[in-house]
Image 1 (cartoon, rainbow over the protein chains, first blue to last red):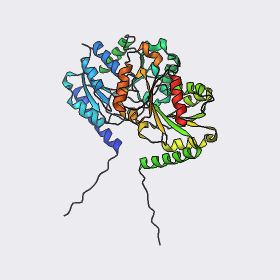
Image 2 (spheres, rainbow over the protein chains, first blue to last red):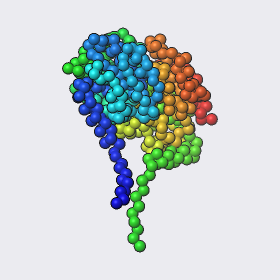
Image 3 (tube, one colour):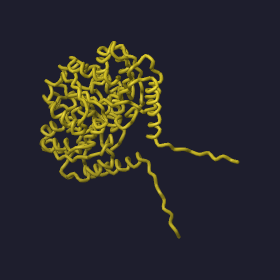
Image 4 (tube, rainbow over the protein chains, first blue to last red):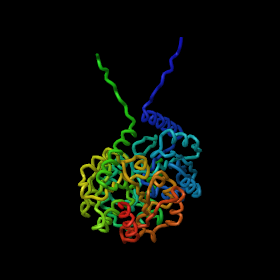
Amino acid sequence: MIKKEIKVYRDLMGANDEWAAKTRDLLREKDIVMLNFIGSPGSGKTALLEKAAVLLKGRLRFAVLEGDLETTHDAERLQSAGITAYQLLTGGACHLSAKLVHHGLRDLPLEALDMVIVENVGNLVCPAEFDIGEHGKMAILSVAEGEDKPVKYPALFREAGAVAVTKTDLLPHLQFNMKQCLDYIRQVNDNIPVFQVSAVNGTGMEEWIKWLVGMKK
Amino acid sequence: MIKKEIKVYRDLMGANDEWAAKTRDLLREKDIVMLNFIGSPGSGKTALLEKAAVLLKGRLRFAVLEGDLETTHDAERLQSAGITAYQLLTGGACHLSAKLVHHGLRDLPLEALDMVIVENVGNLVCPAEFDIGEHGKMAILSVAEGEDKPVKYPALFREAGAVAVTKTDLLPHLQFNMKQCLDYIRQVNDNIPVFQVSAVNGTGMEEWIKWLVGMKK
């Protein structure tokens, strides 16, 4: 009998969700919490993690999977800060796929970790649409971006489990209405914690760090 | 004879390019220059256009097609500044399609215009990949985003005809190495004009405005 070759075209999103499910299984098995950090380019995601490396010492063991299109700048920055960080390069794609994240995760020293933080590609749109198997998404918005981004890019803020409003040290030099920004966040998602932080002068960091530690319990 | 129904699946990018070609025909017919402004959310694209409205008065007649996922905030801001501005909503998509731009363009008062500026969706990745029939792309990068974005998101900077480094009024309050930033831009594209501008205090704006006016000649 001649066997015909069958070509199977699988829905891209379906394949993504299968990898996300594998990641969830692995995280459950290893008892690890995974968060997905999403924000614009330059919103301060990496700076926040550099600071977290210092503040979480002795309280939570974490590693970072660094998503970028090109370069290993961010993983290098985090390694310099003493964090185990692997670089995931999308080679041009605007978000991390669940498959790429799973392969990075599998290679991390999972037995020695409580948490894995994925820093997604800098982009307020695409990464919000792709499940990577995470326990929650953290939206990162810098005050330099303006207060209306939550309503202009609502998908992320709707999906997020928490928001960090970053670079608050710049507030004296900007026309940024924090109350209006918080109102916009509430319009999209009326029930998430919002942390106002500065990685430069440390304002608000301890409150955010406590929330991170609490995610593990 | 029974005519069979033929289903035609057309490559999405192919369809986009057909609309871009229509736009190029229309721009040629009306003798209008169209530029495509691309940058991260909050990089200062709209603020730059508000300022341009004042500085271009009597020198160049322009209108704006404002791209966003949701809200009409930016078109409203520009109309308040006296600019004819239509809002193009992608409804979630991460970039403007050539078709949407073409429909907006067709409805503008083209006989009374020298230039149309398209402000694309805030995103350093996706909009760079889609031809909308423009004469050139302008990359917008705010100093608040950090100097390494040109090498981390090289596609846009490779495609761009010019770069505006915005929000230079914030430089005294940031760790931003302008020389390093310019080096990174040169690494990706060694032959494009770079304008260092502040829409807040006006620094560098006149040089950029002259370049805009020159695009029309």
